[in-house]
Image (cartoon, rainbow, N blue to C red; front, side, top):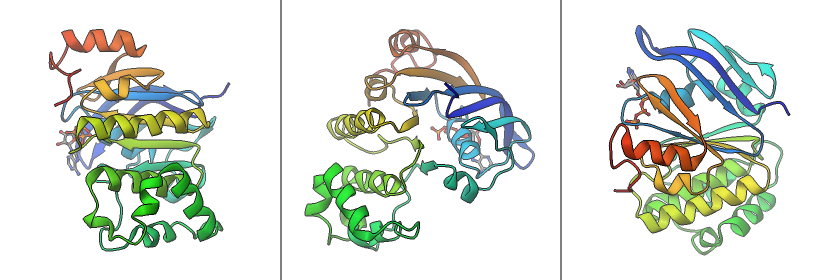
Length: 237
Ligand code: ATP
């Protein structure tokens, strides 16, 4: 089967600063692929390349078998690539419903978006009139995911889902991620702390200094991490 996403020898960064030094990564359809690594390894930059925010200076970006090097974020979004950025990218001054309404432009009705969001995240239904910025971090992350799902993505890119959240909330969110994968959404998820994401991943990679140094089963990668870069990297803070 054609992989949903393929990075071949991707190089790139910010202006003259090179961050990615030849990244090779494959996300097969229906997989949850965890991209792990310490601060500054280039994980967020990799997602920026995958979502079209950064045009790579070398290598090939391939989505569903098509070479999409140089494609804009909009074009990649239309190809089904959806990024939930670090910090979640929701509108804090708008209510839950208003945030979801922002995603009805693609010809999908508000009723459809709301019913899908509320069935996947019942907590959001209770909070639908609440201003998003006043919700808990976990609820805001649910809203970010619900918004992303409104456009029926083929590939969801998640950046540090766990950021600032209690472990129990992170676990709950990753259960949702597993459900989404079971529904056929392919997922590439970046995490600095491995434990929660490895539990729901089908494959995992370690990134160090702008390169993928290892790809393997979640069990193998968990073992490797205990010996590797942070020693305690499998433990959630
Ligand atoms: P973290 O978990 O800390 O976000 P990361 O693996 O996601 O780490 P990146 O955010 O991709 O790492 O950053 C990789 C390198 O690129 C870092 O050295 C960072 O300082 C640099 N960098 C990130 N954003 C920019 C930017 N806008 N301009 C210049 N350099 C940047």
